[in-house]
Image (cartoon, rainbow, N blue to C red; front, side, top):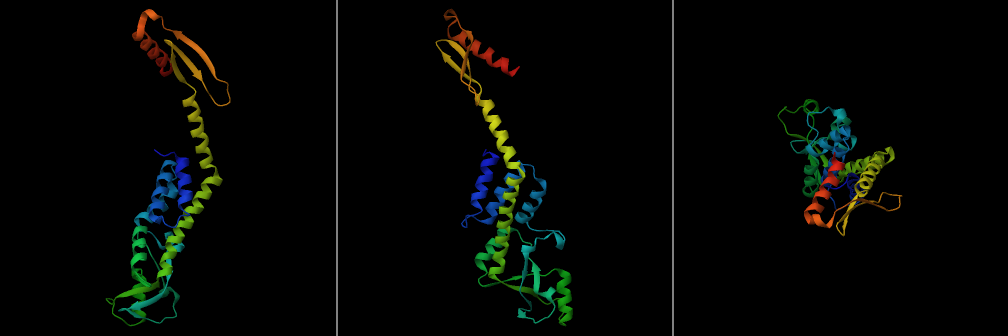
Length: 231
């Protein structure tokens, strides 16, 4: 398993790499947020990955609202009402990535049901008429840029808040503890080597195995030595 600190630095580097899909960045961010138990951040990450389903308009990020031209029956409709010229894109991020590859210069978004009904009523169309917002390709790309910017800001917040610093300190302490005991078998003798950070190496003779006991006796002494640490 990659340590959280290394995963964090990978994410920091990847977010500046234009060849890495945003969906991959989000999955890596999800792994990091899960390890650090950042439940609030996981809500946003999961919504980007799975789509903004059954959420209020206020819960959709601003970068997911796109402006364009309203259309009815695939014909552009002129209107002075600004609410008919904006719609939110709530699809999962992977689907938006696919659309950015395939839509060409323009794409279409659906309206919320209440906005769609209001537009049809204002323009005297039947409620069954096809309604959509025509948007430019670059505005759809803006969603991907918005997600990348938020991931980048999130990384900065983690660093400034000290969460990553605490994780680094914890891992460093664990590494020192693991390296503080090394068993050396030399001439049928078991030694303990303390190599903790900032200390001189010290070798202490724990117990000597008499030659008469042979290899079996040496193994028994090693076993007793470790059992003392476990108990």
